[in-house]
Amino acid sequence: MTFTAHINVMPLKELLDPQGKAVMSGLKNLGITQINDVRIGKHIILHIEAATKEEAQTLAENACQKLLANQVMESFEVTIQ
Image (cartoon, rainbow, N blue to C red; front, side, top):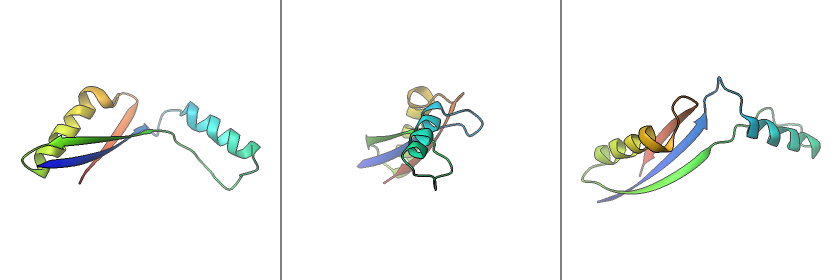
């Protein structure tokens, strides 16, 4: 069975997000002042062959822990469809 894993990787809230700060500054320069905060991350989609949804979840989390996310600086969230 094929599952799709949607993975969001974001910088930890405790750390500065230089890209987010740059975008925030750019928005203010454009006169868009109603936005209070910007965090920039990445969205990854994996197509996984697995017997069960739980197995697909485990494989996706393993990929995040070993390669896709730097857990010292980033957090990740996996959703399987």
